[in-house]
Length: 242
Image (cartoon, rainbow, N blue to C red; front, side, top):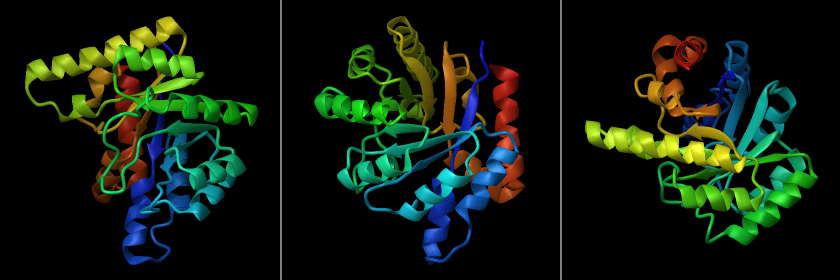
C-alpha cells in the first residue's frame, strides 16, 4: 500500500483572522507549520462569499506551498478565473450554497456534467489535475470517470455523522464500495470531510486511498496543543493505521 498523504485544510485559520478583519493569524505561517511537520500538502476553499480564504491568500500560498496545493472551488466564474491564473497542483470541484456552514453533500455530477467536463479539459490543458468531491455512490463514481476527472474525493460526512453501529457499518461500506468501483474504472481516490482523531481509522482501510483532506479537527486541536503537534498527531494516526 502506498503512503496516504495528509493535505491540511487551513480555511479556519483564515476564519479566525476574518473575525477581526486583521492580519492574524497568518495563513502563510500556518501553511508552513503544517508542511514542516509532515503534511503532504495544503488545501484551501475559495468560496464565492469569501468568508475565510481571500484572493490574496490563493496567490500567496502558490508561492510557498512545497507539497500538493489543492484548491477547492465551486463552478463559479470568478473563482474559475482565479484558479486559471494561479494554476494550483489540483483543483477539487465542490458544491456550494451561501447559507451553509460547511460543504453539505457531494457535487451533483449528473446535473453539471457538461460544465464539469468542459472545465476539466480547460484545467488539463493548463497542467492542473482535477478531483470531484462526491457522495460514495457507484453511479456518481461512474459519471465522474466519464467527465475525465483524475480523482474523486469521497465525501465522508455521512460516516462521520453516524452514531449507531449499524449506520456506521453501512456508511463505511459505502465508502469502501465507491473506492473499489473507482479503482476498477481507473480513477484515483481521495477522501475527506468531518474526519477527526477518533473516527479516521476505518477510513484509512479504504482501498487505493491516496490523500486525506482534513481541516477543522486539526485547527480545533491546535488551540490546545499547537498547530505543529496537532498535525504530527494526525500524521501519526495515519502512518500507524494504514
